[in-house]
Amino acid sequence: MRTRLLPLLIILLAGILLALGFPLALSQAQAEQQRVVVDRIDDTARFASLAQFVTSTSQPDERRATLQHELNRYHGLYGIRAGVFYRDGRTMAASPADWRVPGDGQGTGQQGRPEGARAFAEALAGRRSHDPPQVWPWQSDGRIAVASPVIRDGDVAAVVLTDSPTGPMRSRILRGWLAIAAGEAAAMLLALGAALRLTGWVLKPVRTLDRAAHEIATGKLTSRVVDSVGPPELRRLAHSFNEMAGNVESALEQQRAFVADASHQLRNPLSALLLRIELLALELPDGNEEMASVRAEGKRLARVLDDLLDLALAEHSGTAQVQLTDVAEIAAERVAAWRPSAEQKGVELTSAGQSAATGWADPVALSSALDAVVDNAVKFTPEGGTVTVTVRAEGDAVTVETADGGPGLTDEELERVGDRFWRSGRHQNVSGSGLGLSITRALLSGGGAKLSFAHNEPQGLRVLITVPRNAPDAE
Image 1: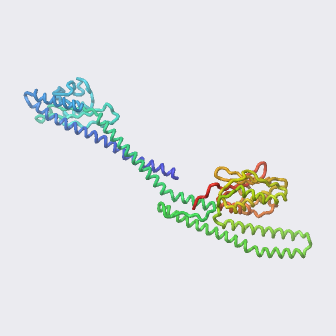
Image 2 (image 1 turned 180 degrees about the vertical axis):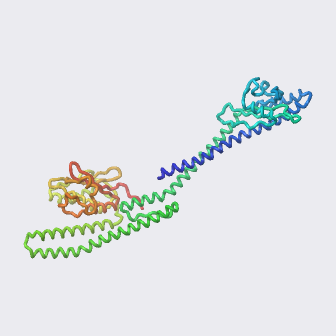
Image 3 (image 1 turned 90 degrees about the vertical axis):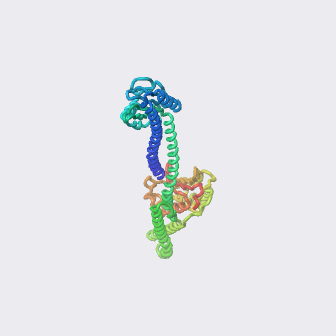
């Protein structure tokens, strides 16, 4: 969920920063150009005041020389072309000397520039030229033309025109944009850090809920979540989850207690009933089929009650005493213990694989599980068959595989094997209650081990007990 939520937050934050950054960059460029335009307006106003003296005297040569001197200094110092032109376009004074009114077709330089001609025409109308179009950093040929009228006796006698290069201004705009981009990058990094913290804060209760739900699903019913962190909605969800988990645990505990109590309470009446059956059998002729059937059903019922009690105890045992255990050694011990029973039936029971492989398990639960699995394998393997128990350490798990030579199971039956009281229709003549593998699964799940089933080639069933090699997480 974090990988889906975090990009959305990043895109949203990036959009906000860009929405703020572009107007800021535009405003910075406009402000920089406006500063240049204001400076040119001040310059043209000063030159216009000097030009008034030239147009108002009958002997203007000295005044014109002063104006020309100022224009030359101005051009030499700033590199800005400046000139004062009469209404008909004749030059009163200009620097450089060959500069003419843009668009009059004379001289060199920027003749024909639309902006200079426009500014000159606006000044002839008796007003200062409008602000020129914005010049951007990538416009290497961009220039700024500003014109002001020279007013004498209420009429426009001449026009002061400046034509400024924009290289320094474009450099300042670019530096300003780089500063804005750096600020945007820093803000984006801060926003990314804030988004990481925010998503972590929001999703932490979700991850905790997911972990707790998984633990409950795998049989750890005591798992709970902290309901004091995260947004209020998730805190309420965590509180509701804890209540639900408590109710589920209570219901299952009541069910287990009922099964255990019922199994225990039925043992004594059943034992008394079996004793009376044995006494009754003494009064009947030997070989009575009905009495033999009653005895078999009674013993089957007693075995079912014992298995039910074992299952209730296995599920009620809680957390197993997990410790570092030599799984291969326990497997070898159980094979040795069941070998006489297998030989009595005519089945060869062998061990294979690694002679030493450690994993984290409850030794007692693992031994009981192996007893149930090996017993089933020997029970369903016909005389002359082979049962092999193989120990392998692969990756982060140790696997104990018990492969028999029995009839095996179909794909549909593999999906149901291990369910309580389930037995294949083809195996109804084999003694058993259908609870052995359920007890085995309950014993293993408490220690983090797993039980799975697969086909054995060319025939038979493979039962795999998987034990983790890494220590369980500390609570």
